[in-house]
Each structure stands twice: as structure tokens, then as C-alpha cells.
Length: 349
Ligand SMILES: Cc1cc2nc3c(=O)[nH]c(=O)nc-3n(C[C@H](O)[C@H](O)[C@H](O)COP(=O)(O)OP(=O)(O)OC[C@H]3O[C@@H](n4cnc5c(N)ncnc54)[C@H](O)[C@@H]3O)c2cc1C
Image (cartoon, rainbow, N blue to C red; front, side, top):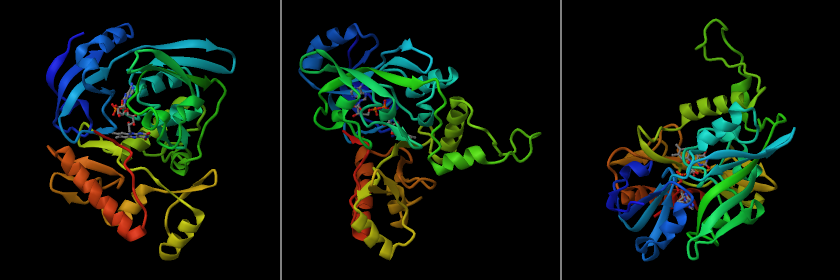
């Protein structure tokens, strides 16, 4: 294992923030974990595990050791006529796992197509998109306790997955390294078309069958790949590509409100957007930011994306501090206008 010093992280975080780590190391095999944990640079310093860096914002140089998770491998553990249990190592690219599943006709994670980052980070915030969350298929998480080096297997339930949340972001924050996860997928069709935008996209009639680029779809969701392709196309049209403009996807979480709060807001904003989920009401943070006047706004080297107000962008060479300053202005503005408090989804380091 080669430890590097004063290592630049600008290519390892999708915001593209230019910061250095005091120490840096890659872990490529599970057998290396014991060695990693015994290194003085690991034991004596604060540490952060990184996957794709698509959900972190570095606000300054990292005065500790950054460990890049490169553990690879996807295997089928068991299957019967209806289900298949798949184990994937934490350093696999999440979308590669989705492709593995949809190419074999396994249902369950197709709506989570094209979410950037790694498999190991997926339980951290219970990744979710288009009506599906990791929680729906997660069987277990394998993780090493940082203090003892002991591996523990958490059942899906023990991970306490919630909306963009897990035990690893709360009680066990910075206490475990997630090395692998196991999912249970279905061989029986289970399309989740609960999201209107996805349903409409799939139902849109093909305008002209002789023109493949005519814009129509008319795809019947007969297999998970159809849904995966549709999700990927919708995402590409709406979300900025971090390779082109630095960002970490949704910067803020949607906001839970009580029925009374919602009714009060509806008096002033009758068209306010909201979702009802298991009796709880969630207001899209993007709606709040847009209606506070921030969509597409730019302040120096940072700004709010013009198609998706939930995404803060680095227009080039911005520092983490500049992004935080913008985020704080938005939080204050939304608080003043709607009396609601936005909380970051992104992990601020
Ligand atoms: C354009 C774009 C779109 C996005 N869309 C979505 C979306 O639709 N839904 C969604 O849920 N998210 C979305 N995200 C956020 C992000 O893709 C996910 O949160 C993803 O799971 C992060 O994976 P990562 O490997 O990049 O994590 P990183 O950014 O590397 O790490 C995130 C956090 O997890 C910790 N961590 C990472 N790996 C491990 C590990 N193995 N063990 C312990 N801790 C670890 C890190 O220390 C950090 O605190 C989007 C991001 C972008 C840039």
C-alpha cells in the first residue's frame, strides 16, 4: 500500500474543489484493510473514506488521511425462480451494479440508474430517485469498525435507513468503513412508475417510428432496462454533468412539514408543491429555492443551476467556502420567506 502525501483531491470530488489531503491511500483488496488499519498514518490521524466524491464538499485542506475505496467485485450469492441475491464490493461504481442487474433482467434498482458514486456510499444516505430507495432492496451491509478493525454485518434494518439518512450518518458517523453490500433483487417484473415524470416519459407516444430521434418513446416497461434507459435519459436532460460543471447533485434535502404547516403555507402559496408519503408531507427544496428567486442565479464563481434549483454549481475554481457562503444565503432567504429551514444533503468536510 502506497501512502502519498499532500495529495490533490480536485479530481476526486465532483464539485471540483481544489484541496489537498495530508495523506492519501487507495484500498483495492479486502485483504489490504487490516494492513491499512495498522498504518501509523491511519491510526494517528483523522480519516475520511471517499468513493466517487459526489456527495462531499471540502471546505479546506484535509488534515488527515483520505482513503479511496477501490474494492471491486460483483457476485450472485444465491437465486431461485423469483429472486436473486447479489453482493457487490463497496468500490464498484453504483451505476455498474445497476447495469449488471438490468442486463440480466433483475428488478429493483433500475430507477436508481446513473446516480453517481460508489456502492459503498449508497447506504450512507440511502440513495433514492424516482420513487425508489436503496432501502427497498438492501439485505445487509458489511463494514469495518475503524477503532477495532472488526468486521460487522448490519442487516438492512440495523442500518436505520430513512430519507437520505442512515445510522452511518448519525449514531455511527465516521465509525465504520463500508466494504460491501448485499441486495435482494426480483426476477418477477416489479416496475415502479410512481413518479409522474417517469410514467409520462414511458407513455409518450413515438412521433414517427421511422425517425429514431423523433423524441417519442412509447416504451412499454417490459424489462428493467427500459426503465433504466428512461431514467438515464431524464436525468441527463435535467442534471448538470459534474465533468462539465462542478456539483454534487441535490445540495439540500426536501423539507418535512406538518399538515398544519402545509395548510398555512398553502394560504400564501396555493400552488406550493408537496408530496405525501406515509402520512408525512415533504416540500421539494428545489421549489422553495426557485420561489425564493435563486434558480439560475450566479454569484461570482458559484451559482444555482438554471434547470434544477436544488443543485449548487461551481462555475470554475470556486472554493468550498464560497459554495458554503452561497448555501447559507439561500438557507436564510428560504427561512425569511417560508419560515422553513433547509438542511444540506451533501457531507460538508
Ligand atoms: C449529478 C448528481 C446527481 C445525484 N443524484 C442523486 C440522486 O438522485 N439520489 C441520491 O440519493 N443521490 C444523488 N447524488 C448524490 C451522490 O451521488 C450519492 O450520495 C452517492 O451515493 C455518493 O457516492 P460517492 O461514492 O460519490 O460518495 P462520496 O461523495 O465519496 O462520499 C459521501 C459520504 O460517504 C462517506 N463514504 C463514502 N464511501 C464510504 C464507505 N465505503 N464507507 C464509509 N463511508 C463512506 C464519505 O466519507 C462521505 O461522507 C447525486 C450527485 C450528483 C453529483
